Length: 137
Image 1 (spheres, one colour):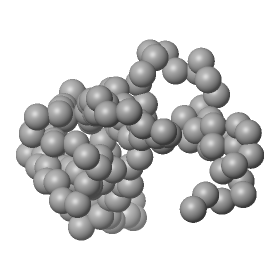
Image 2 (cartoon, rainbow, N blue to C red):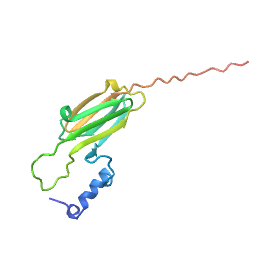
Image 3 (cartoon, rainbow, N blue to C red):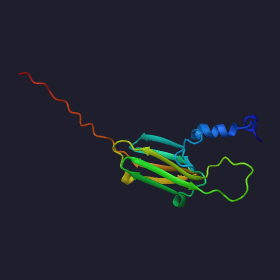
Image 4 (cartoon, one colour):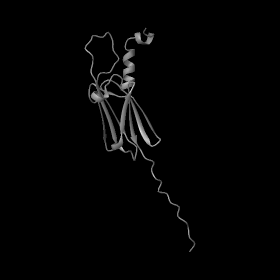
């Protein structure tokens, strides 16, 4: 069952603009963003990415270059004829800056229920603060 708003001309496309920016704003046609959640705490930086229908072992690539974590995936369109689709096909990509001290070489990733979770250890920084006593001259 479709809502009244979905039946208005152009309304579904408006949500696409809100989600991805205005048409023509992408640098590369067919490149779409990946929705993420991120959290820093308990000695780790965790990024969760929505990637339903993707086999991350075959269709995704996770790289860390310096302090930049990049996630790329590709969803290939099925050949069956569709009346309507709101699925995104093509290359999906997202890059995020890692927090200071992140150990990218120890990052791990797992996939469950359409969500890819990337965990990067971030050890607690030692304060290095020292109290200096004042002496009387």
